[in-house]
Each structure stands twice: as C-alpha cells, then as structure tokens.
Image (cartoon, rainbow, N blue to C red; front, side, top):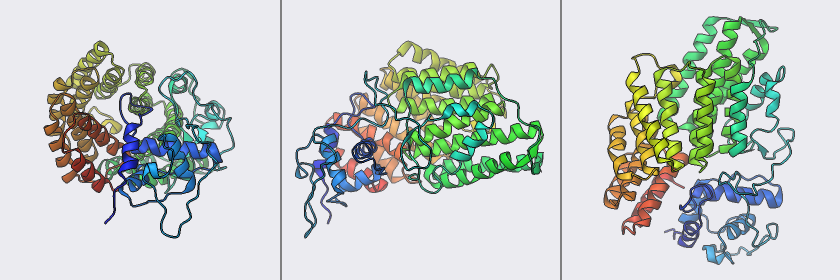
Length: 497
C-alpha cells in the first residue's frame, strides 16, 4: 500500500500562496512555481501541473526528476530531499542538480501581488521555438492590416490536443488594463468586402453558430479539458474561412463574432485547466476579433472572463479595471442579463479587494439588472446568467468583504437553483458554501458539504474546480477540525492528483 508523502504536503501547506494572501500554496501554484524555476535555471519548458504534485503527495511518485527535486527544495525551503519525503528507488543512485542555485527562490509566472520588482518580461520571440512568451507578446500587430487574421491563425493551433505545445506567461496589473483599454479605444477596421476564394453565405454562419452553442453546452457538462480540442478545431475552420473565402460585410462580421467567441471559449477552457497565460493569449485575440465583428457584448464578456481570472489569481483591482472597461466599451448596448453578469463579477472583484461599500453597491445593482431581464433577451453566450448565478456572485462578494455568515443564504439559493446540466457550477457553488460555513464558525457543516459534493460529483474535477475545494479545505484546516485528514484524502481520491 502506498505511503502518502506527508512531509511534502506539510511543506507545501507551510508555504504562503503568492496569489491568495493568508492562504497556503495550492498544488497548482506549486506546479507553476516549479515550472518557472526549472525554466529560469535550464531554459527548458516542463508542464508539471497540480495532478503531478498530487501524485507526489500521495506517494505514487517517490523520486522525481533531479531538476524537480532541486526546484521543490528551493520553493519549499528544504535542505535535503529527505526533508520533502523523497527517497530513491532501489538501485537508483541519488543525484542532485546544481542547475538551480540553492537558496534562490523562483519568481511566480505572473506576479499579481503588487511586488515592487516584478519578474522581467522576456523580449518577444518568434512563436513556435518552444519557449514561454508573455501573453501579449507582439499583440500590437492585432491592430495592423492583416494582423488579426494572422493572430487568429497563430492561436487556432495553440494547444490542439495538448496544453503543453506552446506556453505563454500570464499577465497582471498594467498589462491587463492596457489590453482592455486598447479594445475600448481603438477604431474598428472595416472588414474587406471580399477575399479570394469561395464565398461564405448566411447559412454557413448559421451552421457555425449552432455548432458554437453546442460546444458551450458540452463545456458545461464535461468540463473545459474535455472540449478544448474540439473548440480549437472549430476555430481553425473559421480561420480558414476568414482567410480563404469571400463574404458580405454582414457575414464577415458574423464570422469574426464566431471567431471571437471561439477564442473566448478556448481561453476559458485553458483557464479551467490552469493554463493562465495561454488563456490570456486567447482572450486578447478574442477581444480584437470582437471589435472587428462590432460585437461589444462578446468583447465585454471576454473582459468579464479576464476579470474573473485576475480576481481568482489575487489581483482583484485589475479585475475591477477590466470590468469598468467592459461596461464603457459596450457603449450602452448590453442587455439586462449581460449587465447582471458584468456587475455581479464586479461585486466579487470589489469584495476580494476588501472594498465593502463598493461590493455592496455592485451586488445591489446586479440584483436590479437581473430583476429587469426579459425572457429570451439573453444573447447565446449569456444563457447561463440567472437569478441563481447572481445570488452566487452576491454571496461571494459578501464572504470576502467580511460577512461570510450573511453570504450563506445567497450561496444556498444558488445551489438550489443551479441547472443540472451545469455540474461544474454546482461544484463551485458547493465548495464556496463550505468555505463560507468554515469562515463563519461552522466547520462541521463545511465538512459535510465537501464530502457530499465529492460523493455526488457528476464530472471530473478540473484544476480550477479543485482550487475552490482546496480553498475550502484550507479554511476548514484553520479551524482545527479533526476531520480534515479524512476530507483531504477524500478529495485526493476523486481528483486523482
């Protein structure tokens, strides 16, 4: 029977998260720091993720690669491999790597914590050389003639069936705000009336739109990692149509709108898999395509996704700025449903920034918007916005603005009303409710909720969903609850980390 590596898990839990103040390092964060450390020392890209760290902690892997062991010793402040519970297999000679100087801690891939000395941005390089690039490298070409089509062609095969093929560094702070303001202020170029080749008609655009809607629904049911490849394949098809066919201006705008939404969905599925820099790359290209399509609602929704990612990574103030740009750039063309989604996310960002008055004001505005929504007015990309999702946003804003007990009824309302075809949302809502119960002094209910969620989970846990549960477990652990070890083992079994 495997012996869990408790030393490694304890070392991780003693180390502070670079993104979530007051919280321990998550498995996914440790994986990202390990990847960054190895790359900084060796110029070699590796794709360790939270699943691999879970294998180390469960004892499935007892003697990782020398570079990995060295990076983990540095990150977790350990003097020896044995301090982290590592031991070589029989007949394996213990080796160590001097590629990473001892005592030199790596920088996070992105530093959204406001450090005065953020990691230096590497100069832009030609894509495809197997190196990490900032997500906005060369992004200014999007606004040059032909730049959007070239960028769409570049991101369409970005990851394909594997998230390891090309790596991008996540953005934060000023870089995120700059991307938003470019979308807000730039003059949209007119789509060429015709391109050489076969002509696209309205029927083709309609068929692609139907397929896009099916992909959204599959993402809800199966999770981002299951559908990412299908999304990128569809994006390739649309890119070929944009580059090699002719179409009317209206149909061209429709194609660019589909490309923008596919890029957003590719970004979302990348984010769901914990690939934050790759998600940014897709989102930035999607913003430019939304501008070309004259589709401010799609662009605003992309910025909402970027804001959610920023807030989750510990940079809620950038999330606030992104959402303000989304509302301004939409120029009053959003439905009540779309406005509810944006302002609900704004309430969360203000809450995570500990701005209680602003969070309360945004939460109230979100409730007003969803109350004004009319049946059938939501655009296809906002089908998921309901009274329940707004209740969830309100509850999350209350947790982080200092009133977790008051958040619980809102979160329970969201759980009660969640669509059964959206199991990922249900898991997120349950994990957040458990977090609220633990923070408000009721760890018994938090433990019960997490066990129940795991037992009834209808789909595999993605890295993002796992992150919600790890936050809940961290909050339960802080209460000293005796059931935390059983809960940790239960979560580890279902996530197969």
